[in-house]
Image (cartoon, rainbow, N blue to C red; front, side, top):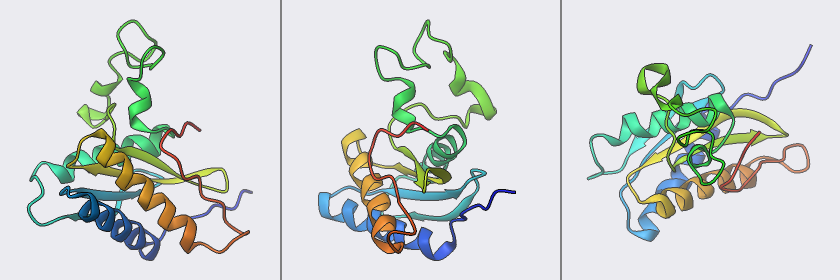
Length: 159
């Protein structure tokens, strides 16, 4: 039997706080959602003044990243993004009643090589969402004791 690592609310809140700090630093109003390995929200925060559409979009991005084990922008990145016209997953964004997000802002949370959740961000442009997402992953890496836990901290994640 395999032992699993589970993301808990304390770690999720820590990640959200780091993403929100980064958003404030770069001057963008974000919504940040942290989901478990099944794609269900653990913690979500919408900054004051952030778009009302942000929560659903952030959740969709986190859901996709956790469930498909890859950063959402990799689906439509030329030339081999699987969701691009003519490629094997073209139209995948219609899956899960439109919940499947194929644009920048969703990142799987990978600890010790295992996808344990996802982080999704909505509110900035792609560069801003990425900066805030990487800040969340970095915060988790700094929180978890080394060498017991290794967190993948990068934008382009494909497991």
